[in-house]
Amino acid sequence: MILLEGVLFFNENIKTYQIFDEIGKIFDKSKFIIKDMKLHYKSDDEIKPDIKLSIYKSYHNNKKRKEIFARIIFESFSQADEGSEESFDNLDENTKNDIRDIRNIFNIGKRFPTFTDNKIEKIIFTKDAFAKDLLKKSYPLIFDIENSMRTLIFNTMTFKANKEWFKKELPDDIEIKPDRKDYEIFGLDFSHLSKILFDRNEKGKLGKLLENLEEIDDCKNLDISQIKKSIPKSNWKKYFSAINLREKLKSIKETLYKDSSLTDEKTIKKLLEDIQRDRNKIAHNNISIDNDFKENLEEKVRFLEEWIHYAVYDLIVNIKQNTRNRLEAETTGTNQKMISCIDDLIEKVANYYHLDNTEKLYKFIKNHFYEDNETQYRYLRKIIYYIELKDKITNEIKIIDQDDLKNHHDDIEELLNKMQNYPTVDIEENDIETIEAEPEYTR
Image (cartoon, one colour):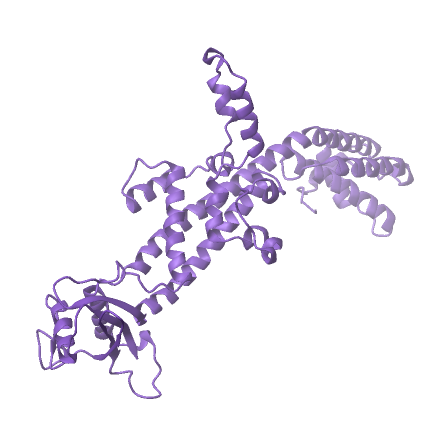
C-alpha cells in the first residue's frame, strides 16, 4: 500500500545513489536514517520500519538544461502482498505513527517543502494515505454541522422574520444554482450561510439613508440617532443577536480563540469561516493538511454544535412563550365568556334538579345516569363535560378560541332548551352527601 508519494525536483544533475544521500539529510534530525538506500531507525538497527522507500529517477532536456526529477514512494511492507485489502486503518499503530512522523519531517500540511542546503529544489507530494484517511473521517463532521446550521437559520428566520424570508432577506450577491432553487436554504453552499447571517442586505433602507444624508446641508441638523436607525442591519443583528448564549460564546472566545475581546458576532463569523476553510480542504481532497487537522476540526465543530443546540432551545422557548402570550391575549375574553355560559348552564340545571351548587350537581349526575334512557344519558354526559370543561379553563389546561366559543354556546343553548324534556329525580340531601365523586377529565 502506497502511504506517501511525491516528486523530487533537483537544481543540478545528480546520481541515483546521491538522491538517497540528499533524502538522508532531510531525515538527519529525525528518528530515521537512510542506510544502503533503505529506511532504518537510528535507535535500533535490528528493528526496521514497516515502510519501504523507493526512488525512481527521471529527466528531460529543455533548451537551457537537463531537468532532473524523481518519484519518491513510501509504502507499507505488510500490505504489499497481492490481494491484501489496502486500508490505512488496517496498518499497525507503529506504521501509522511512522508515516505521521515522515509527514512532519517533510512539513506536509504547512507548505510544499523547499530546501537550501542540498541539491533538492523542492518536493511536491501527490498521494497521501494518511491525509486521505483523515479527510474521509472528517467529512461526516462537516455534513452534520452544515445541516445543523441550515436548520437553525431556517427555523429562526421562519419564526422571527416571515415565511417569505428566503426571497426577501437573502443578500443579492448569493447566486443559487438553477437546479437547487427549490431547496431554498438547503440548496445553498456552506459559504452562503455566513453571508445570510452577517451581510447587510436592506437595499431599500440603504437608499433611503443616502437620500436623507444628501438632503442635509448643515451638520447641526444631523440627527445621529435617526441615522443609526436607518442603517441597514444584518440578519444576525435583527434576528440572532438576541439569542441569550453569552456563556457559550464566552467559552468559544476564551478556549478556542484565546481572545475574550471578540464580539459575539465576530466570534460566530470567525468560527464559520474557519470551518469553511476546513470544509474546502475536504471537498477538494486537499492532502496538504497537518496531523492535527481532524482534532482541530472536531473542536471547532463541537463548539459550534453546542452553540446551535442551545440556540435552537432558546428559539423554542421564545416561540412557546410568544405563542402563550399571543393566545392569552386572544383568548382571555373568550375564556371568560365560555365560563359565563357554563355557569349559566350549571345554575339552571342545578335549579331544575333542586340542587344548590355545582359539586352536588356533579355528584348527582354521576350517580343517576338513566341506563334505560340512552337519550337522557347522553344529555347528562354533556352536562358533566361542561362542568369539567370549566375546571380545565380555570386551571389553564384548556384555551377557548372564537370557534370553540361559538360551537359550545350553540350546544349549551340546545341543552337548555331540551332540559324540560327530562324528568327530575327526588333525592334527599343526606343521600347527596354520601356520594363520593371527584371531577375526572373525560376529554
